[in-house]
Amino acid sequence: MIELLAALSASAAAGMRIALPLLVIGLLYGGNLWSKVPLLSRIAPPVLLGVLVSWSLVEVVLSKDRLGRRVLLLVQLAFSPLVGAILGMAVAQAMGAPRWLVGLLGGVGGLLALVLQLVQVGWSYRLSNNIPLWVIFAQDTLCVLLVLFALDAPRQGGLIALLLLWLAIRSSKEWHRWYQAQAVPGQRGNPRKYKRDPD
Image: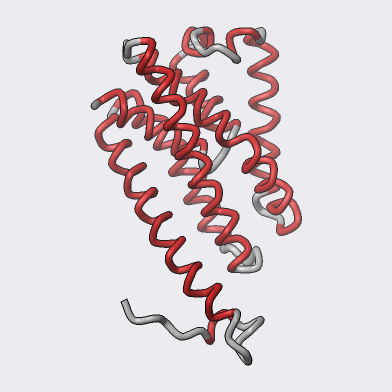
């Protein structure tokens, strides 16, 4: 159970950023953690570090710009399942999970990262990319905290990841209502005017 919560915590970080959680794990917990991951172990540590630092800076810069955020979201949407699986497997291996469980947690982590990334894309479309800067900074902070919790406080990190998953499910219900309201004549193009369906 602890391995599952730890993998969920790390994979949830991949649902927000791609390079930043991998960079944090490498800097704080050493390159040996990278060497245990199937894909990352094939890349020389200096090269991997340079790529992760560069892309982390790109994520920070592009997330503050409207057009850059759109490009960034598309890239993150494409790679978040892979990074989520890598992080889930890395944390599971670090906690000594059996090999069969490592692969399973990698799959679950990849799906969680994809779901959280889809939520980001949905809210970006819903808000027309008018996302406050404080939300972006809070997202970066939460991403780092989830990585730290994954190995140091897996219970807390796993609970945060489950809370994020619950919020994603709630968001999908809200988007369904909004989409239905868009089909109502006279309300198209103005999502704030939609009526809530009775629960």
